[in-house]
Length: 277
Picture (tube, helix red, strand yellow):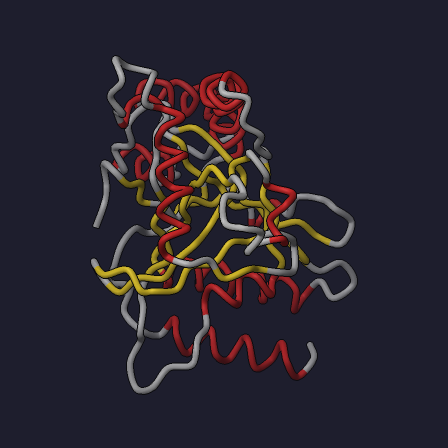
């Protein structure tokens, strides 16, 4: 492990020593259920984008540098933020070419993130536009593209946005949980120097009804895919997401472009509007 990675590991472990007292606990979703959530997105939510002629990717890729940018800023004695919000936006270039880097997202779903301290969002807004780069977005421009995303769902139920029809304004992730996930990646890379994790896939997914999750759990236990003693399914049900709500699942990808099972199928999410801070 090189010096830079050693410093990363030490810094992340120091931060993890703080109490996990804010937000949602990280869940490693059983692969069977995670795959169904991704499939449900394709069946239930993707048609909304297609019907509105709006582009999207099923997977948005982050580099480790992207992840570090989300997690670390220069701080004094105490944290200046404790969670990250990943906003779903409908990007169209109405800003006089101010964001030429985002040309590949024209008329498409674009993921933009911000930092927040408890209930207060900080004035830092960024869009991930490649595996290795991000662009700073002005607050007023973020509001415009967020409102355009909301408009995609207004015609679903009598012109009213409902949390049960796929709409999510943003995904809220506790910084400490994302840091714990990052630490798992560093630990994996420490022992797999010949084939390290190099990117993180942020996979669009749909939440499932509790009954469907329980049905998948039963099937998984009967077929040896889920351990009887696993608490992860209960934790997922306890989130009480609205069915068909848009969410994300985190997967880690190695240098051979393979999904790393031990560091994939992770949910760290609270979903707004129904679980806003």
